[in-house]
Length: 347
Ligand SMILES: Nc1ncnc2c1ncn2[C@@H]1O[C@H](COP(=O)(O)OP(=O)(O)OP(=O)(O)O)[C@@H](O)[C@H]1O
Ligand SMILES: [Mg+2]
Image (cartoon, rainbow, N blue to C red; front, top):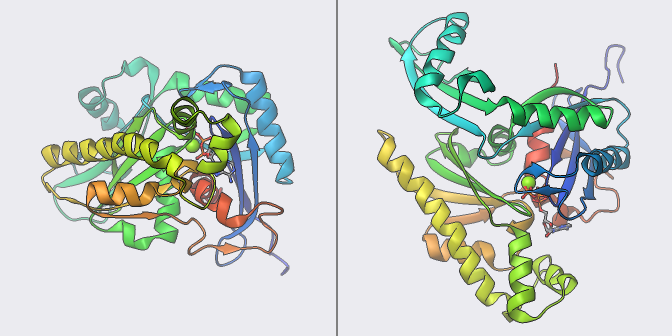
C-alpha cells in the first residue's frame, strides 16, 4: 500500500425476506474489488411482503451478517424498494440543479400519487450536458415511513447508513458494470427473491419503470409441498439444485407464467406511455429464484425473447477468498443488489 493508499471500502447491505446479504467492495484502487461476501438466513415471517414484522430479529440477523463479513465499521449502504417507492421519468424546462431541486416538489405533486407531506424526493438529471430547452429528469419519491423504518433497523443494529439508495438503482449499478449490453434498448431486469419478484425496465440504461409481484421462492416451495407432497427441505433442494426434476414442471409452468405476464404488463405499460413504443429486447434474471432449474428457459420460451441469468461477477474483480466457504456460483446470482449497493463509492 502506498503512502496515501488507504482502504476505502463500501459495505452494501441487502435486507431480504429470506436472506440478509452483505457485499464489501474496496474502492481504494483503480478498479473496484469485491473483497467479502456474507449471507445470513432470516427467520421465516420476520419480514412479510416487505414489511418488517419483527425488527429485533432483523437487527440481530443484520449484525450477524456483518460480523460474518468481518465488517468492523458502522457505515453501510442500503436501499428501499417496493410499492412505496415511485420512479418516474419526466421532462422539465432546462434549469440549474439548484432550481431543479425547487421545481421537484411541484413536479412530484403532478406525478406521484402519495401525500407530499409524507415523502422524500430525490432526482437525477439524465442529460446534464444536453443542449435543448428541456431536460430529462428521473424523479424518485419514497414514503418517509419506509425510509424511517429502514433506518430504525440499522440504528438498532448499531449501524450508520451512509446512503439510502433505491433497489432499482442499485441493481442498475451492478448491471452497468457487469452487463454493459443491458444498457441499450429496452431491457427487463427481473429479481426473483424469496417473497417478491421485482421487475425493472431499463430504457437505454435508464431505470424508468419498476413493478413488484408477490411471487418468489417461498411460493414455489409452498406449491411443491402442496401439489407434490414434498417436505420443505426436499422442495428447497430441488429449487436450489442443478438438475431439473419433473416435480418442477407444473410449478415452473404456473409461476413462470405469472412472472412472464408481469414482465409483459410492465413492457406494455411502457409502450403505451413512452414515445418510443419500443419492444422489450431481452431480460436478465437474478435473485435466489433465478437459480430454479429450468425457470430461465421457461421465461425465454414464453416471452419469446432472450432471457439470461445475470452475473454480478462478470466484470468485477474478486479477491481470493471473498466468498469464504460459500459456493461462488450458487451465491453470486443472489448478490446483484448488494454488490450494486457496495459499488457506490462512499466518497
Ligand atoms: N445457495 C443458496 N442459498 C440460500 N438460498 C438460496 C440459494 N439458492 C437459492 N436460494 C433461494 O433463494 C432465496 C433467497 O433469494 P434472495 O436472496 O434473492 O431473496 P430475498 O432478497 O431474501 O427475498 P425478497 O427480495 O423477496 O425479500 C432463498 O429463500 C432460497 O429459497
Ligand atoms: Mg431481495
